[in-house]
Length: 79
Image (cartoon, rainbow, N blue to C red; front, top):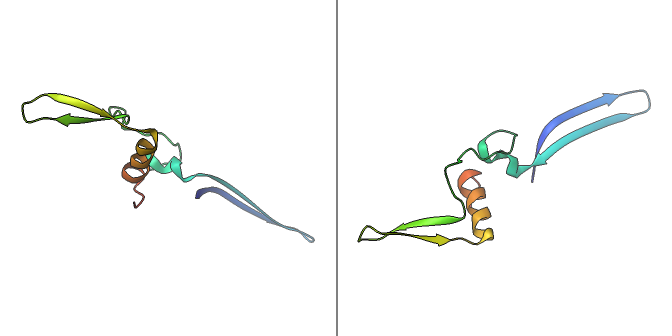
């Protein structure tokens, strides 16, 4: 899916021209067309697990899971 960022038309005697510019929908992760994820303090590659005894361990995620979470959580796309 793409987001239309620019749309122009022109009409002449013999032609009707349409120009469309777009970006991949992933550019909307932060709500604008810049494509930056503003949650800089989040490490998308691991999840923190807090145990009952107060210790913390980390579960390292696969790339496909990182992308899925970015799209669904930050891009607000349905699962």
